[in-house]
Length: 231
Image 1 (spheres, rainbow, N blue to C red):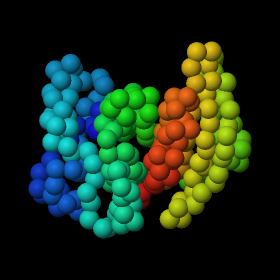
Image 2: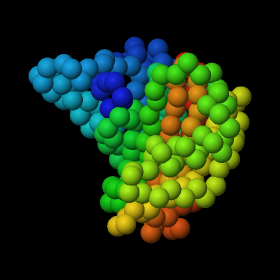
Image 3: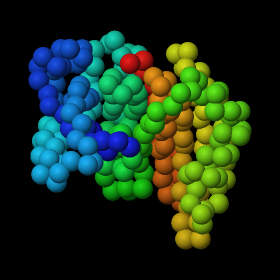
Image 4: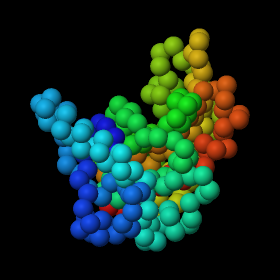
């Protein structure tokens, strides 16, 4: 659906694959399978891969309508939200139904507001030999390092508003809210990190800091919905 740190996944759909992955046959589907198009392939291969991807986007195949086997959807999707469930890469979340998908470099999936494009959600993952988020270190230490030295640019100042440890379906998460301030611009975000399936997952959902108070509750629904799944 989107560019990951290693590849661009381009999907080919069939009724057989839909049945294989227990997906309801409709025009709103998550990625059931994919063919990796390496960044080192020729330009013609990349163009063909992207053409297939665009056809799928036009068919509306990115939102999930899975059978009740999915814990996320079994709870019921909130009004005015859609569910994105990636059973291949092992994660799921809700996003506002009026948002659209886009390519966010280095991320596996991303959606943004059609008009306020700085309001967006994106998810990425990298391989890890860690087994649990606690293996990264104490929450305060990890969150401070991420916000001040990873997420913040050299000209930005990080301000952590809140941090929490959560356990969902036996998996542990660090969840935090922060603001990044630069001389000309400030952004506010929620982040949720977890480890599962030999991967270190990061979800960030944010907006222009000036609009944070107005849209914070709407974006928090997205952040709170993030779950890693067994694959």
